[in-house]
Image (cartoon, rainbow, N blue to C red; front, side, top):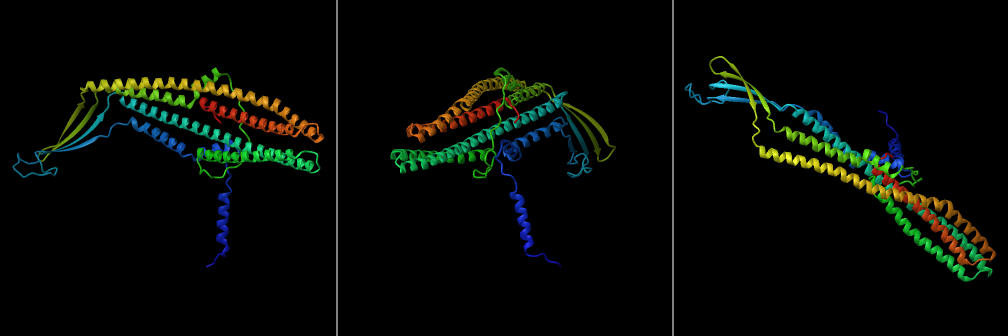
Length: 419
């Protein structure tokens, strides 16, 4: 038999490992993270399975109850025939074979099917609510991850500028053009930025762990560097957003499904006032003689009215509670939506002012300070303050841009907008 060289199995394993590790690492954009969660999030999978289980019950809910089979041994002691007792059909006085089919009152089967359908709708609404909450959590975690990484990048760029400035100051100090205090001051600024950068690196690790937890993945699972923030949306006015949220928000759909379910349960409880039926067919087989047939009709007597009145009152209260839940959810959405829209617009205006006004002014001030310091017209404190102003402005712009996106995520979650 022909044998493969020893290196062939190793090569095959290596190729398989290469295929496994060739999977792209999520994190570079929000879409890849959402796609990963939709495919792997166990909470979503659990909700989907629950919704599927409820849908599968719709058809069976309207089915007739199973028929019952009875075997009755009449005079099994054989007193009339003068014989001994027996439990064998044919060895007793009369053997009766009876089949009974229960029949619910008219309309009860359709009401049970409607109740199962309402439960399926509730399951699907809960699935949508869970999905939008998970996607919003991932989007928020991604924005915070982007902010931490971008903050570190700004600080490292500032550190590079300060180190270049340090070389300039040390050169000028070496020829006696600036005092030693300038050299000490720039080194102090470098140390301060390095300390801030250590805290930022901790924030990056914390944001990475939070984002992995939202997916979910292991806290230390690798994530690609975030590429860009989601684009800013152009939302309509608050009244239009509120109407949109009432119409399509998954949380509102979930509360309305509770109302529909409670109403379906109430309809069934009300119909329980009426009796159920049963039809039976009996075959009588005496030990001696000809077989005969009997037809039986059975009806339940709805006598326990106190229990039914209690059940009906409970069903009415459940409908009332579910309707109140819809109103409560609408009020909650309106309040949160108002705050989110106000914050979104404020952060967007702040970002516009920072990027188009303050940041260009700060850069022009820094360029003037650098030129003035090199010519000896301004002192070192003015130059350092200009550097600080650039850093503060860039960080403030980053904060405004990311905070605006976080509010945008909240607005999308409240209105049920798709990503």
